[in-house]
Amino acid sequence: MKRAFKSVPILAMISLFSLSCASTKTTLTWVWQNENYQGGLLDDIMVVGVSDNFERRKLFEDIMVEEFEDRDVKAVSSATVIPEEEELTRERILVEVEKLGLDAILITYLLWVKEEDKFVPPATSEYPATFDIYSYATGIYSTYGGSYSEEATIKLDTHVYEAESQMMIWSAKSRTILKGDDKRVSKLADTLASAVIKDLRKKKLIE
Image (cartoon, rainbow, N blue to C red; front, side):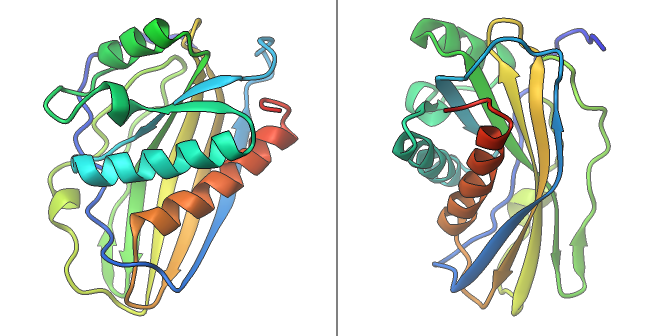
């Protein structure tokens, strides 16, 4: 499947979190791997967290990067090379990826959040076969928040693209359960990174 590239800015992930989380678990509920990929191990990855809040985006990406580098995989946060005042677009990301000589792009965005009876429905969009950025959400994700219930379920999509061909080579849906009143993006990023890295290793995409 081949689709024309679009230049669409990232709009929103979510303003989810306040403090640290007492009990967090992330599970990959669905995983796909492109069997046509023949590029070998990924050594250098650009990490992109989809969010309209720069501080949360940077925190999420920094933790993901740290987890990758703890496992000897070089990773770069998009926030370190594309500052808050610049629009985060497909073209801007690809420029930095080429400049840094990276071989892959990992992008994570929100599918939905369920908290007691509150529900943010999933966006509907066909997955891009080649690297692209879509606005999966509207400002509702920016304003969602405030007080929290005893448990919240967060569903995310994470895609990995080969930088040179911009082909999607791995994709997963994840479910994270946050328990207690204290929830923080750092805990989500930490447990998501562990689950993603474990499967990427299993699929022999990273060392």
